[in-house]
Length: 454
Image (tube, rainbow, N blue to C red; front, top):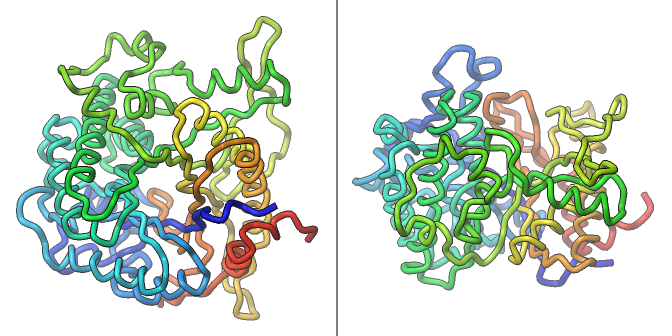
């Protein structure tokens, strides 16, 4: 019971969460730099100023990846590190960091999978309207061109954006993420449309200018609905509800994915949002719906749904005391079966799980090691379900564990630990957790050991 021979076993991280060096070597400010300056915004007053100091310790981190046998590493580029003002003059020291990082990965036989935008939007451009400004699509395309020109001789796998549901919804609607806004819903849809335009223009730039054949996708949140029972009626309502839009918020799949893949917004969203719709110009949807090579999905949990007697959907009562991660997310391994299955059925693209993992209570034990059996059990259960989805016909191409390192978990600061490598934030010391050694064995066995009795 192996995963396919060509299956990509990876791990992921994001620039602001691990790099540190927030004000070094000419880097410009991001909205997260500014958010962290605001009292009360981040747990314990934490910031990403130092984080994991990956900016200075990238060679050590690349060696760890090589030792674990990772086939790929999903990294993101800090837009203001490369272009301090967001557009215009390039920062050569910032770009050189990613040049060195890519080389270090390749020296350790780890393929770089690059995400252009993982939330650290340039503050200078935010002051010019950010995603509310239609010009943001062109700003993003200019930035993409700089990165592609520099790295595409060695990088062939690209993701344009990570989780627009979060950086638009949490960043501009509910306000708990940078830039910390609470805008009306018309402005939310406007910002979302411009970010989708930016996605499409970035895909065009990559296709036109990449020096090696590009494989391009995006990494939206995979919001998964799980059938209450494995019967046709429950499966159908789960599939239908997973792609339905029922509330004026960003927490859905289809408002972001349908335009990218089908070139249109979904009808139920158009009806619900008709009073708040943004300006859509001729050619916009064609720009957004550039051909993609894979569909990336970040999947951590899922929602059980069931069919009522009249064929409508309801959420069954939650069990008392459900298993939870320290993010208080329900442990739902079946999400890695039904999410990939439903997404693959709808969008007809090869699927990559671009994030999956759990936040745990990890510390260095008295024996000098970090024991995290809950994470090993969590990952075992989820990967078994992903394997089942592939066996049932899903074209699952890869899996990126979140995260390689413990890191700055946005508004939670350093309270949450997702890594398979423990980071002592005071000293920067890396300690491989039990889960890191476990994952190394899983990769070497192509997943066959996931099904052994333990």
